[in-house]
Length: 457
Image (cartoon, rainbow, N blue to C red; front, side, top):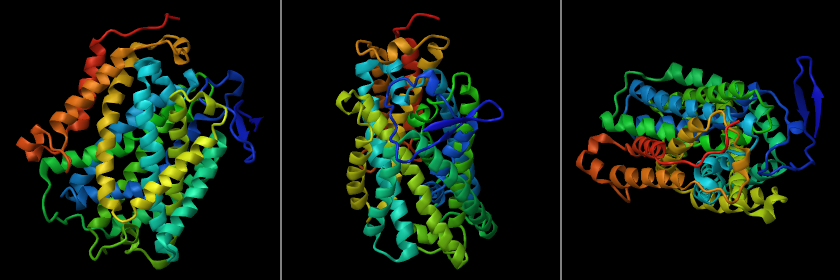
């Protein structure tokens, strides 16, 4: 890859697509830092301009029993909270130069960090990869009338190839795809909002519990990107963190909010059809625009999965598989194969599985985030490099706080088909407070426990 100076003193990156990224989980050297923070707005917009985002809004009105305006308030609340934390985390990348899961070693220690890194690998490399591959396959199948399985194979191959080539091509693909997706979905959103019936009442009102479920689901979706944050800011130059955080947070909030609101509005359109969920969303559109939208839905899912498989492989390598560190490109291929199998199995019941998946994501990300944010505040103004690659470093307080938050919140507040905690069992109208409780308990616990600190700079 090559860098070219611009008039404002920054550099642009020319990507040779035949060149595989050389770096893995190590700290990026200063002489390789490059890029513009504002491009993070595009990087975090394009992966959310897809049907998986729209379907969160559909769930809010269709499954959780909210009117459009109730759903809008819940969705915006969940997205705003997640986007703020994403901006805060992203801002650290230029200063530390490492992936997010490597940075987590300061909070959990080298050994303890295996827990969140493993969860992240499974969530991104397998779970999200499968969910978004299904969305893309449905869209292509509805557009071309080809079998969904054949469409699934096609999108998986594209996703794996780009993620394997690495960081620069990922950013480049997301940037140009964002322009196309923004134009298509802006038109679709305007038409959807114009035809929606905002006075429509849900058949079964969800009440407070439905509002909490919708906000938690939106938060789980958007905060699902938080463990990826510094993966895409670690190549930026030191001193650009604040700008990078603003761009990342804003791109995430705007893209998720607009499409979730469009999804919520689409359910209220008179005559909305059932069946293939992507076809249902486009049924009110003119034929040509509907076909373009289906293609955009597939492209958006591919954009999301490129980040999923790239960051999933970063997290996997963070777990200490040194033999693979110099062969980073192999890991996305392996993840793609497993993700394909999971996606194939999920083609028959995508909607129900998606709802459960989003809530479970929030269960572990919330206590992880509580620990990480408190650790970030506690270690402000300190040199973290001595701890990032020190295999002997231990910080059991982080692991303890995360597990306490996870166990207490799930044990008392989970509201799933396979398990209902005592709180929602006694008060069904409370919805699912697991994520909120998990975050608060883990953050408070970690703040009170002793922490090993590096030397002050």
